[in-house]
Amino acid sequence: MLGLFPFRPLCLMLFKYATQVCWEKFARYFEVELKEVKLTEDYYVMDPLKAVEMVDENTICVAAILGSTLTGEFEDVKLLNELLTKKNKETGWDTPIHVDAASGGFVAPFLYPDLLWDFRLPLVKSINVSGHKYGLVYPGIGWVVWRNKADLPDDLVFHINYLGSDQPTFTLNFSKGNIFT
Image 1 (cartoon, rainbow, N blue to C red):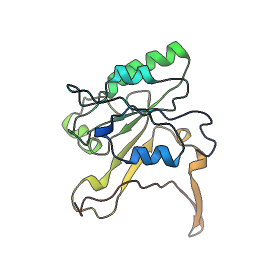
Image 2: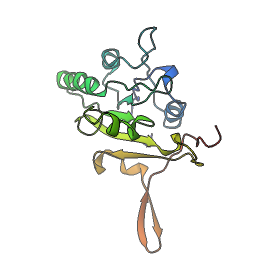
Image 3: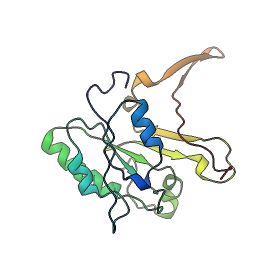
Image 4: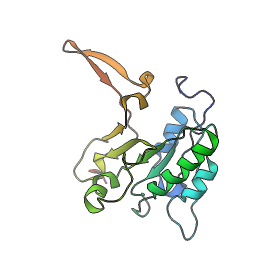
């Protein structure tokens, strides 16, 4: 991945039936290893205990889903943050969390304002949301935000001169609008 994570495979704690193909595309495009917590009969979201057990020294982040495709359930980002904080302290690692809030990021703040899943948790470094999950949106459109500018590797940002000024841009698209669904 542009030399940003040499010998550090990405550790995504997701299960196959709740995730979008975007994670597989990401892993393939950026040449990182994808790890998944498997779905169980009685538990339809990522089990944070199992996820943190899978984290190793090569893990660049753990991804939690806020609004799974399968059930709409929110994964327990607060518990994941607590468990991962403990593991980071024990090992000396600095494994962060990415929240895939493609659907839930637009509703959680209003329906569950006290739910901790966002930048209020210290290990959450980035969050994405998808505008195209909601009606009448033609393009596949979404946004990702980082806690700090330093959390977005500069090698991923392109600088273009537009109308006489520097316009930094970072764009990827892994999805489509729902207007056609």
